[in-house]
Length: 479
Image (spheres, rainbow, N blue to C red):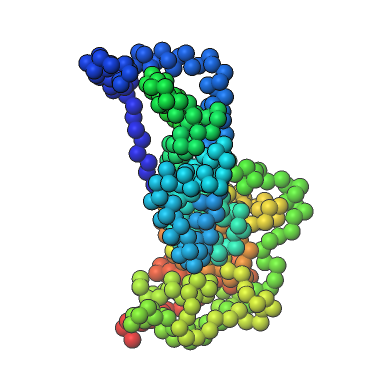
């Protein structure tokens, strides 16, 4: 989400100040339109006044409190609405109401419930809530569903999912929303104070300038409010920008996932992969259609551990759909998929998807380690695995900066490292040259010698490199 930045050129500011001064001189009535020099002198006089800074701190504390409350309420509401449609429907009238009701009306009504000193807290919160709610909900709705599938398949936990997959897509929405909301918070907060007139506030100072026809003071206090709003907004945006790499698990900021292996720990850590003997994968009469278009029709085959099965067919013949059915990402219209006599109710599946589905901002090593238990043998072997695929020098580089072939090998390393009973490879060597294909295929054979491996490919050479049994799928549209 791209944010438009307003560039305030010094010459433009100077031009408007000159025009202001000319207008003030032409009007020739400082009471109605004081010049910038008079207002500047009045503002300078306020700076050493302790009572002025007490007003600033008073208003700042209320506005910040309302802002924090609004952000919390809006964020929680957005998360709940994204998860449950009923919550979104329930909150929709409230959000529409808070956006459309004038601040003055809210302020007058709030005076019935609250002391004037705390009035700005409620008003600011009500202004901030819909801004944060709508932006956060939009950000959550914009998340990549393909990445959600990868997270579910690899059983990546909540904290890792939030940091590496949700926050990178949500963060731009939050940055824009919080910056805008804080500017609105100052406007609404001071407006509420002008109506409620709490003692010792900036709003009271604005009200007093009206009572005493102190136009210089009104301009000076207004400029002070603008300066406070600008400064706090800049600080919030700077903090968000500084925290973004940490919150989003960027390369170089995911220390736990990018630490160098400890040989002593590696030798003592249990392996996370291959703890059970793999069982046969049996696909019996599986069919799948989308509307009237048949994609998979009556596929029956079995895959024994130690012998990869390579599904070969032209593009659009259902190879990917069949793999997705085995992975549990699609439901077959007919037929069954079972993992032989395995004692587990649900076999663990690892997969190289047709597209890579990586955490773009995270390093290659962090991507491989995301499905792994910290301290496990696979965790410590991840750098060696990347090295075996020719990615030793790239392991700490962000995945988003890698070439297509490098990204493919990162996805392959992740699938090989993850704990699994069934390994599904959908065109695993796409984008690799002949040397890299041979290297990757040799590694697959070495690490999956006793595993159930099902491969979708259209390249007979790749099947030969894997020593796989070729199964040809018929094109359902031709049947």
